[in-house]
Amino acid sequence: MSTDNDPPPPYSTRDPLATAPPSQAASPIFYHIFRSHFGNYKVDQDDKRPAFYIATRSLRKPNLIVHRGNGEIDKVVAHCVYPELGTIYKIGLFATQNDKSSIAWTKMTSDWRFEAVVRVPDITRMSATVSAKRIFLWKRTPNLTLVDEETGLETAVVHVAGISSRKCCVLEIRERYGAAFDLLVVTSTIAIYEKERKSSSEQPIRITGRGPAGAQTAGFSGAFSG
Image (cartoon, rainbow, N blue to C red; front, top):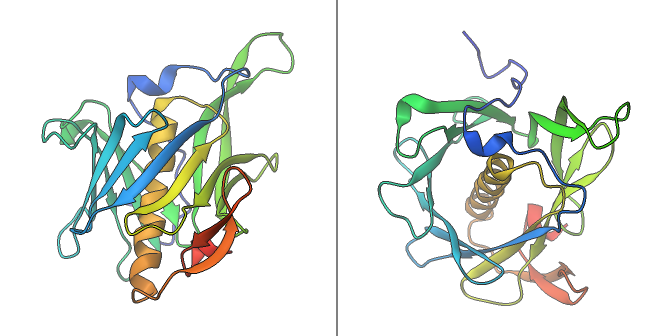
């Protein structure tokens, strides 16, 4: 039986969306993250199509319920459970939408580190890929950055949003390891943002950081403000 002191296990999921190998030519994908007055989150793609809807719960587990699209009740694709006495976030991806028996869990430590098995180029064979175990860490930088600890590669970046009552940030995923990995990154981003928001006691935002185009932006007091 695992405990909160155990190292995070390898990220493994039966989700068929995770099977697609990355493309070196794939462009970064941008997710625009908004928080409603009711405390829930919606995530839109660049073309404004809804990607995910995340319901938050303070007193019940899981703390985050991730729906694909606009939040249809039959399209639950991920859960997140916050640490209580321990230090481990638990993120579960569904192999089959809305089927709790198909969930595969991974762990993110309180310093925002998780392990994942991803498809990377095979240096011994041209145009081939291999599975590789990598550890990813969300680092506090002028913009919160997800770094591959082995290569130092910036896998994803959270750009704080402009002054807005609803828009939280823009998540840029630079390395494309498949839709399931994208879902894992989105869920971990929301988990960190929500925990930081609560711990800040709703402190006012301050101007800090740089947006995707280099413009000065309004940052969140905490992990998202450097």
